[in-house]
Length: 191
Length: 422
Image (cartoon, rainbow over all chains, first blue to last red; front, top):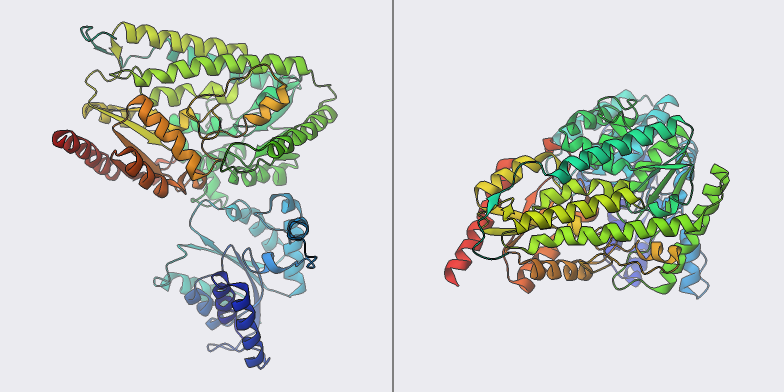
């Protein structure tokens, strides 16, 4: 499964009751052949981590994967950061959510976890052996933008390539410029 | 005012205006002097309990938001924003934040107040702007300055007791931290005294903004925007109470003498969002030529007022920590749509508003996100025309005067058409 498909399934879940989500996930797991995904474009194996609040529009995800980049992990607030820690069900919703927020994966929007975020992200990049970090942001005054300059400098100093893209989240049409930037970013990194 | 009194225009700087310049200059001089003498510097968000800090003789208080607004009003916004953008801070971030970050990391260069003295402690909260926490985190990361985050529950109805107690518990943590860091014990009597000064100041602020109800209005919202500076920086001081008394008295005298900012006032408007700092003179002059006056603004009545109310909160001498926790639930940002609409409807009725200008501000998500719904509600409930314009409060590069006025003029025409049809 590629990231584009994966993100689509996750996003479908945003608007589906939990029973429906379980159904979708079960059927996708049954269909899945577990062979590693290979992009339609140049076949390279350059791992990148995607970051942001929401997954990028599918045209951007496709552009990333067709540029020969493999999404080896995500640091997206509505994806990995939200499901990275799941409390055990105890039957008490209050208890569940206290546990959920207390032990939440460090996230820009979970204010008490701010100090742990940078370390957690570096660990993720290291674990997944990612060579690049791509931030996909919506054009608005957003939490993430206060961290990006610091993060960018820190990661570049550690030899991780960084690309920041900002656009309107609904704009799935005008991606020409972004495509060129993604391809150039991919070319920067050696397999 | 009696109808036979002759009205005169009052565009000249008032004595209160001159007085404001002096007290703000004194404030910044004292701030820097205090820091140079080794006082403990706190940078705080505008709604943190500034009166609590008055319980420590060794603490001086600086307000980055107010400092940024002052820079923007002096047309220095873009220059300081660009410095932050050159450091990779996105142009979509709040322009106050960009001005402040640009100024702070350039050692205060380009600021008439030489920036702010470097902080020993940062205190932010998530009830006037949750993004502000991340803005202060920038300094926490870069300088290693400790950062205290006050968590205030968002509300859709009157503040709940458990929420109030939750805030008070955090005040106890803050007091402990301040005592540890300054080596000084909090003097609660001084906090009480500070609250009394704030209370007195708010009483006169209410008198001042109530002159908007006069016909023609005794003030413009632009006057009140400018006069907000000390309420953000000097709460809990006798200087603030004295200044607002002077301001309200002077305005009263001018109204009595028939001196009005827009004597030929034909359209009485209300502004919703942060002040357009870079347009104060330009916008007010252009509106004046059209016989329009923005007489009031949600931004100026939000301070000191409680959820869903137009009037400021009145402190009755109860437990200072209780009162300070109660005051965290101000009218605009930490409250839901219903409460925002309630406060605005009350203002519209009491002041006699003909139309509302909703200033959608991509630089201030917290203020702007509900505006579409609020606009719909106000148009339907109050039966007055409204308009939405695009503004950035401190970055003139993201504002188009002609586009804004095209819409404002359409609003005035709509008000005129209604009157003609009435």
